[in-house]
Amino acid sequence: MNRIDRLFATLLLLQKRDVVRAEDLAAHFEISKRTVYRDVAALSEMGVPVISLPGEGYGLMPGYFLPPLLFTADEAAALVLGAQWLAQQATGRLPAATADAVAKLTHVLPKSTRHEVEDLMSILRFYVTNAPFDLHDPLLTKLQSAIRNQQPVQIVYHSLSGDERTERIIEPHLLTFGNGAWYVEAYCRLRMDRRSFRLSRIEHCMAVAQPFTQPLPDRQRPEKITVIVHFTQESARWVRERQHYAFVRERILPEQCGEPRVEMVYAVDALYEIQSWIFGWGAQAEVVEPATLRQVILEEAHKLWEMLT
Picture 1 (tube, rainbow, N blue to C red):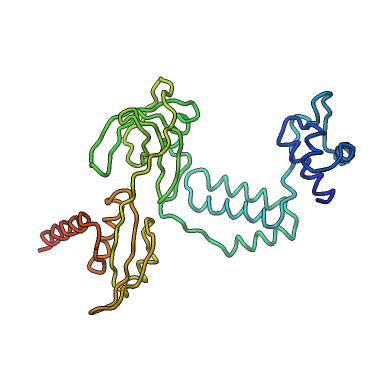
Picture 2 (spheres, rainbow, N blue to C red; picture 1 turned 90 degrees about the horizontal axis):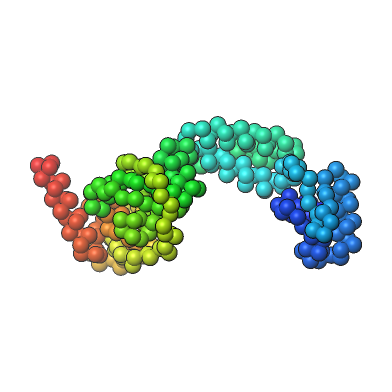
């Protein structure tokens, strides 16, 4: 590592920690303590307010921070494109705040780096989900506060699998966003176990003046259910473009009689995760396994037939 890089890395360490000993800097960079003293003196000469704490080490004067002027083109692109993705996928106050942050960042970048980043911004777009999220949604904000304060909440939850509403108290620990929806991982006092709740199915949420009672148990993942579906070869290309998230693998079946088929295998936690998606492909999809899913598809087809005739 050359000296310029080492000085910058030393500054980052000082900014990250309250106090750094000369011995620790010497061991980290594999240099002598004498070289550490020279590096600290060089930083001071550059205007960095390094203070020496007798018997403790070095630190930075309170209130000092390193302005974001030393990003490489790749680092700046990563930050700006990440912000651009966030702005395009979010609603509420976040897009405007993200745009302001990007404008500030690009303004302080060197001219050549700024041109590279602006070129990328002009030619790349992100469309990841059809369900933009709002980080300032009242329910999401309430759960964030409950997690920070380790405060349980009472909810009324509409379960999709059983189509029932239950009132329960949960101890929220983690919020995740996936497949176009927010979920909260929590300890459920009703089930006395870890559960994941989709926020769009929470019909009521109220904080409870009680402390947490349980840590979040390790997730006991159920054994996956294997689903095998045969698609016509013509439809397979379109299936690949709108593939289900539980997809595992595919293979082309040997041609026997009629049109060749493509076998696709999925692994789901529950059949309701995939049955509507399969039903949407109509006669182009044939469920091979499991038999219970074949029966569900058959019953739905009969209901549709009766409704249309």
